[in-house]
Image (cartoon, rainbow, N blue to C red; front, side):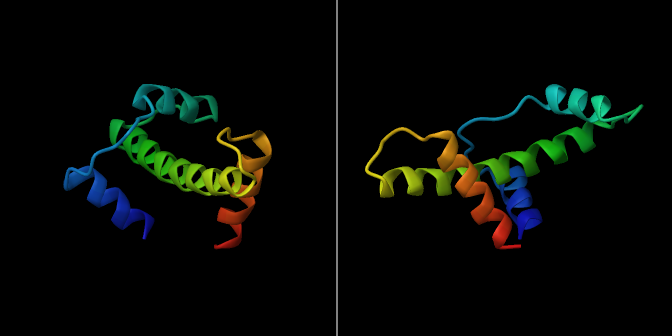
Length: 88
């Protein structure tokens, strides 16, 4: 499912609201110990991280709305992460 979403967003022109810089993600991979990182690897991880972040944000917005708030709190984010982790 995630890979299908990645393909749709990459190749079928679905609009994205914000993007993580690929170079920053590549630096993150290097900081984790990789000596060399292909550009495609950086792009792939970037898209996967964006997809996961979008799901977490959507859930966090629901939690904030449920609490009659417009502001997302760190607690909303943590609850959303737990909720996303539970589905797997």
